[in-house]
Image 1 (cartoon, rainbow, N blue to C red):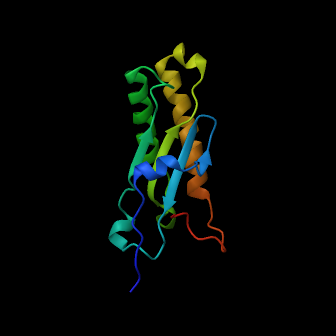
Image 2 (image 1 turned 120 degrees about the vertical axis):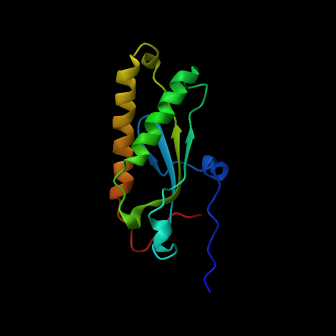
Length: 136
């Protein structure tokens, strides 16, 4: 009998360093073992946490827009069945001063492009043979 580890909570993920970074976002991810999950749960969506601090985006409208864009990018990410994360957290790490004057449409496009590139990097990453999945 194989004992399965419990997935970490979002609070534990928030304390970890990002596994993947872009200029403004960080992604902390816990990959699931390929043989640990039954076929039914492999197709299930991975839980996604979002951390958009008020000090980086003071207006709630902007924070909510950023979260909406991140959820949509996550939902449409090109996951292979064996590369689907068990749980993940996207953090806004840095804001730009010109975001205050940038039109919302252009800002959302910029966020989406950056998140798509970040998620594509994790989707295309190959596990190294000597390294177990990042689950702890």
